[in-house]
Length: 204
Image (cartoon, rainbow, N blue to C red; front, side, top):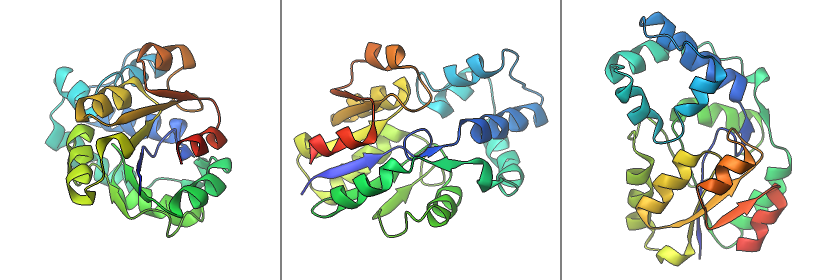
C-alpha cells in the first residue's frame, strides 16, 4: 500500500479566486490588509501559510475567529473541481490510502468534496482545524498509517507544500495546474513535477 497525501486548493479544486477573497477579507477586517494584491497573497504560500501570516504580525487566533463568519458565506459555485482528477483518484484509491492535508478548514473541504462528487475517496481530511503545520500533519499520517517513507507522496501546488513535504521526509510531487507557476515549482525541486493529473498514475 502507498499513502497519497493531497493538498486541496489548487490540486483538487480551482479555488484561487475564492480563497484569495476569503483571506483578503479576513485581513481587511482585522485591519492588516494586503497591499499588493494577488502577488502578495501568493507569497504567503512560499512557506507555511500560517507561519507567513505570523511573520506579517497577524494574530492567528483573531484571524481564525474572523474567518469563521467569512467561510460560512463561501459560494461553492465559484470553485471548480479539476474534473480530470476524479478518475485518477478512483484509480489510486484501489490499493492505497488517500488523505487531504490542507491549510483550508475541514468543513469547507468536506462540503466541496461532497458537491463535486469526490465522496468516499479520502480516508481523512486534515485541515487547519486539526493543526496549522502541514509538516506535522504529514508526520501524523506517517505514524498512523505505518507506510514506508518511500511509499508516501505529498502532492501540492505551492513551494510551501514542497518545503513541508521535504521537512517531513516524504516524496514530494509538485503540480503545475495550481497556484504557483511551473518555474517557481521547479525551483523548489520536488521529487516529481507533473503538468496534468493523469501523470499522477505513474506513482501507482
